[in-house]
Every structure is written in C-alpha cells, then in structure tokens.
Length: 509
Image 1 (tube, rainbow, N blue to C red):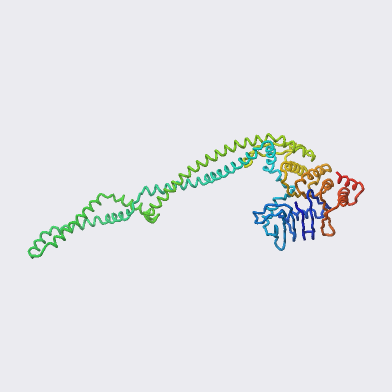
Image 2: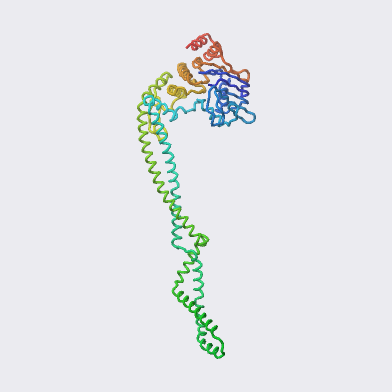
C-alpha cells in the first residue's frame, strides 16, 4: 500500500503531505477545489501521468521487483519526482528513466479512467474463465501451459517459414541466374591457356597465304643445291656446313608445309567465333581462370538453393503438424471453458444484481488463435454491447468483473486509483458501488474521488480538498468532520439537520 504522499508546488497546491491507511480512501470537496489535480500529482510521481510538481514523493509499503532496473528491492519503496528544468525520477534514491519508472510502478498501481478497457481485454477475461476451470480440473493449468509452449513453437516455425516464402521469389531469380551463369560458361567450356593457342592459330591463318608464297619462291634454292655442292668440291672446300644448312632449311620448310596443310583443315569461322566467345568471358571475368572460379561458385550456390527447397518442405510439414496439434488441444480447452461458463455467468450476475445492473450474457466466441487458444469471451447486458453502455453502466460492470477476479485471484492486490467512479449515479446505485469497492478494498488499496455521500460514507479514510483564495489544501477528516462533509454533499453549503441525520445514518450503515 501507499503509506505517504508529499507534493510541493504543483498548480494550485503549494505543499501537501498525506499519510494513508489500507482500504478505501476517498477525496471529496467542492468543484474546482483540486481533487483531480491531487490524484494526477499522485499518478505523476510514479510516471503514470504528466506532472509538473517541483517535488513529489510516494512511499510504498511493499516489495516490488526492481532487479531489471538495476535497483535493489526492499520492503519499502520510495518513488520521487523532481523538476528543476527537466523532470527527473528516482526509486530508492537511484535515478531512473521515466519509462522505467512507469514500468516499475505499473507492477502495483492501476488508474481506472473512463477510457480504460483493460479489464475487458481478451486475455484478462479468459483468465477468469480458466480460473473456474482450474477449480474443477487440477490438470487444466498444465494443459494451458503446454498449449502456450506449443503455440510459441508454432509461431517461431511459422515465422521462419514465412520468411522463406517471402524470399522464395528472389531466391528463384537467384537460382535461375546461377544456373544461367553455369550453363553459359559450360557451353563455352574454356580451357586454361586456350586463349593463347587460339591467338597463335589466328596469327598463323592471317599469314598463311604469304608464307605459302614465300616458301614457293624459296624452293629454287633446292634446285641449285647440287651445283653448289660441286662448286665447293672443286674449290676443295669442306661442304659439311652447307649440307647441314640445307638440311635444316629443308626441315623448316617441311614443318611449315605440315602446318600449312593443317591450317587448310581449320574452320576459320569456328576459330574466330571461339576467340570471340573466350574474349567475352575474359572481358567479363578478367581471365579464363577467373571465369572457371565464378562457375564453381555459382554451382555451389545452386546446390544451396536446392537445400532451400528441402528446408521449405521440412518447415511446411512441421508447421502443419504443430497446427494440427494446436487445433486438437484448443478444441479441448474450448470444451472445458464452455463447461464453466454458466457458473461464471451466475457469479458475475450476482454482483451485477447488487450493482443494479441488468443480467449479463456470456458467450465463448471462436477467435483468431493465440497463446490462450481460439476463444474470446463476449459480454452483453440484455443484448447491449460494451459500446452501447452508459459510463455509469460501464463502470459498474467493470467493478463487477474486478470483484469476480478478486474472488478468484486472492492475494494479487495492489493500488487502484479511481476518478469519479460514482458520478451520475442514483443513491442506490452509488451505495451498491460503495459496497463492492469496500469488498475490493480487502484486497486493494483504493483511492477514489467521490461526489456521492454513499461512497464517501463507506470509506476507511476520508480527505477533504478545499480552496482558500487561489491555493488548494487537503486534510484528513475525523468522524465529526466526516459527518459534516457528508451532510454538505447531501444538502449543499447550508447544512440541514436532516442532512446531518442522514449522514450519521450512512456512516452507521
């Protein structure tokens, strides 16, 4: 519970210091006295709303989990807000961000505004249904846990499959490109050093006719070979050098002739086309070696893309199996919930009757599957949906749900802050709200602004907010002062004896 609240310099309040008790705490006072300002400051100290107070402090008499914020937990937790230029927050005198302060205080405090729909969240409503099932079936809690784990696994695997499917089109394009690259290089099938060989052939082809012409003209040298040998013999000159030279020349000419004969069989167009194809590869990849290396890389990518297909097949099969198991388990959970729906409806309607509301009809509708199953609890009041309820009806229905939850989840507790919970209610309706809040106050510490004497009379602690000039003040009321304030709420500024008598009666109710 919150035991202490201090505020300095916030709007119409110069300073206020309050000490709280357990149970239901109400704030009353004339319109414009500063009641909402005070509650907003209380919320702002814990970063649950915006506050511009120069200094505010809240003392909480309970241990909360502060480990994730790097703060040691204690039996007493001190929340502080300071504004000197920038607003700063502290927990147990250690600085903390606004977001972290909000997360820390959300562990124990709830502000129930007219716009707060959290008690009608799918998960919170199903928690009540499941609590009734657990009272009947001790193994049901484990079934819910198993389903949640199964759903988490299903979600993970489905996300992986969706990612694969999202990439599938791009991967198909990559696979086609890799296959094209490999096929293109394989179609040419270049050999290392082939480019040099082709260039040599090309040069030879370009000189073929000239070589043939020159060799033909040079053949006359062999016709004079015998005459030269005779001349050398006549001169008594050793002719070995001449014979060797002629033999070498003859060998060279024969080799050239063989080469020319081979060139006759060469398809010139094919050579030129091959040179062009090899040249294109070299221009693209730099060299034949680089082209072959690129081909090997793309071949490995193709192999990887083939594995993608098998991975997709595996995930598709696993997701289908998980979904089948989830559907089977969610059906069992649905049947179990349906079995306790009449009991829950009866308990809820007992509170609604006490709050002067129409009976509720509960329906377990099939919804999108999540970690809690496929169910969604729909609540209507005699065919009126939540959106069709007045603010007073909505507030009382929410109180009834909170009362049911309080019965089911004993010991959860915390702090509830209500703003004008009894506004626009009749006397009977206001007293019914007071009784339910008094019951809830056994579990929660409740702060409420009240405009009705019925709720005010049932509070465990009563504070009066008032103004003197432009300044607001707040003070706790003793028993006599409470009767006076309740009488003022009944009859206005001129308090009648009848109002005092009724106030006294309310206090004794």
